[in-house]
Image: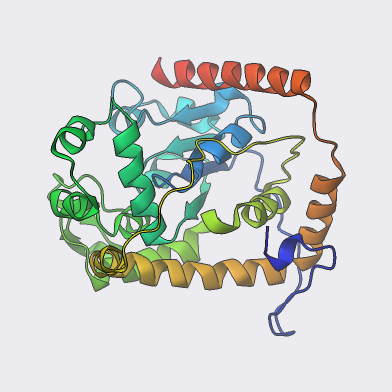
Length: 314
């Protein structure tokens, strides 16, 4: 990793007036919400989360909307919702209102051009994806993806601002204001920025995953003995400059939100410089497991994942 946080002599480039502090772990019953934006390294982070909490205390939103949906979660008794330690999945900001024990958010953001490229190639290699057959048989390109999915552009803004499904007529905003669910404009961007600042304990960046993980370790007291990247795609050919410009044009708000998140990310690293250095030393001191032990971790991880999914669906 090229970032300064992974060098032996970790140094902070922020002004000295920023206080250095350690994050205080959340209260025993405060829930953690992992707002998983598609194609932002969320699968890797999910596998790590599954080792930090009992799988019976994790509610996982079903991406296929079969059983464990956001709508069904809202119908659970207060007692069941209060027992949860983690709520995670492709969900929109706002679900904390249904967690009486209180909650804090984490998320991962990604460069919008890279995220859309990842989405496109995911569609091509995933036969079960609803768009796979259309894109493969008609040999559609990135321009077609943008044209066919206008309400999926600026997706990171939509998730963080709390704009739900595009078929929803309105979404709640601050002080009783509302905005059309199909429109993502400057007002939505400002709501997203405010939510990041006010409600997210850790804002991670896909391009700086290990530093993001170190922030989460210091914030929540996670103990990580081993992890490996999941769903890592093969190296792809460079995108044409014109196509990249088109992606930026249609995801202008996401680009501004990503730049804003990078500033918050850097501030968090600086404020927690000592804790980050300590967590990095701990992570580096752990010997890499052999193939047999890695197989054991993987097998047990699958078991924890399945238990969480089953517990969420019943």
